[in-house]
Length: 199
Picture (cartoon, rainbow, N blue to C red):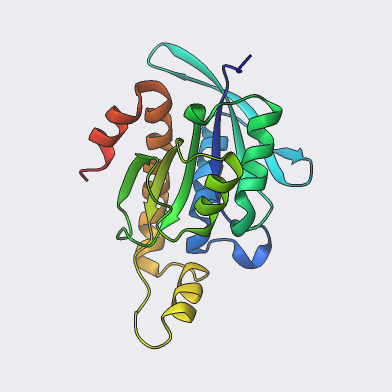
């Protein structure tokens, strides 16, 4: 019997040195949702911080779990699959929020399925769930310089912080990311795509 809960997972890396970095956009958006819906996190099997809450929007109430995997980005799927199986949450009730280098900073794209686009957290979730049929809120962080050290540039970029201008815009951007996750849950993927993908 599948549960009527949704699972929203914000991706990132645990630990002080990763706080506020581009790769932790998912964690930051999850924190916005936690604050918005009074969710308290506690440990889930040592592999995720997990909280439970209720969203009340458009005259409807929806119960949801909010997760921040502690497995490091490349093993995010271990945490998401564990929570999904423990609470019997099907893939079509899972929303993953993550950083995306293929989008400029400030852009949001909502999608379900499709390629992982080189994102190791998404690759891990696809593998662990055995499907890519879950919703994703992609938060643009822009691209590192290409060139001879492209791989190192990319690693340094996603693990780097934001410049002063972007830091000013970050609260609004994260709030939009949280809104996009709510829109998927309450109004469906197509509506969320119409609302956020064109911006």
